[in-house]
Length: 284
Ligand code: NDP
Image 1: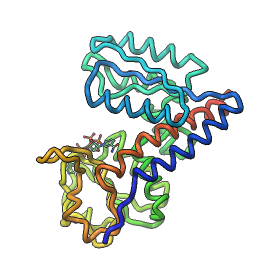
Image 2: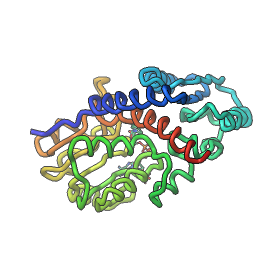
Image 3: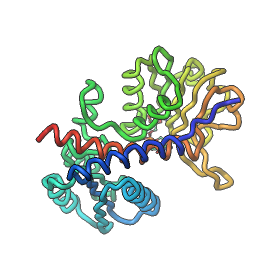
Image 4: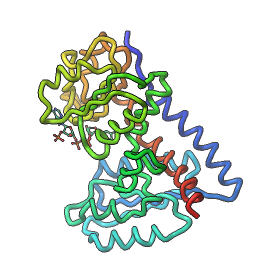
């Protein structure tokens, strides 16, 4: 029977550890502060922003909320980021994506000073990840590494297959698995014989954004499967990129959807906010 990797429990552990750390920082006179910017009122973004604020409140991180109208110009948003970059009391800056069409996401990501880029999207942080230097790591893949470590799953020497090569999930995931000494293959929409490549995996990370795409034909007996996707199925129930029912009897461990990777993303964002204090102290 497959072992369910409990993202709810592990994310709660991480948040509790951070709560203690934040209280300690406070007792030493250091507050942790995150600025959260939302442009427009896309309902999904509002839910994500609300969850981030809730996590901040639980841990003791102060969140500054900026809710800007849908027609905000790029210049206005960049001006706010510039102001927050300069504020010594603000440790992290997060701009909720996606942004309205008139704003270029790349310009926004590059405008956030790398030392406050708690999403880990700035090219300088991406470069630091690749070269193994200090910096912020994209939250979802960083959370997956924590799920593996805290579930006692060793990556060292394992055949790891990551399906998806986005800048926020697939690519940083591949680098992190490499850092843990995995043998890593990255697949995408041009990969030939995807089933065969996936079947080589001891650890399969599914991050393509297609509901229940990966069935047992893609999974080797005893593999660990990490399901990054989040969707609603035909019955409006949450599901992932993996057809969990179909693979359940052959995998050794799997992340459920919901309750697997999802909760880890916010926990790692909180981790990055605390890490920001450390990195900023080292810089000053
Ligand atoms: P993107 O759409 O940015 O990237 C999808 C990737 O999958 C691309 O690299 C694409 O290849 C590849 N792909 C698409 N179809 C196929 C296919 N049939 N075979 C092989 N590769 C394919 O998605 P994200 O990385 O942003 O997200 C992936 C999933 O993870 C989504 O469901 C998203 O909702 C979820 N997600 C969940 C998070 C969480 O907290 N749980 C956080 C972030 C994302 P190509 O590059 O060739 O186009």
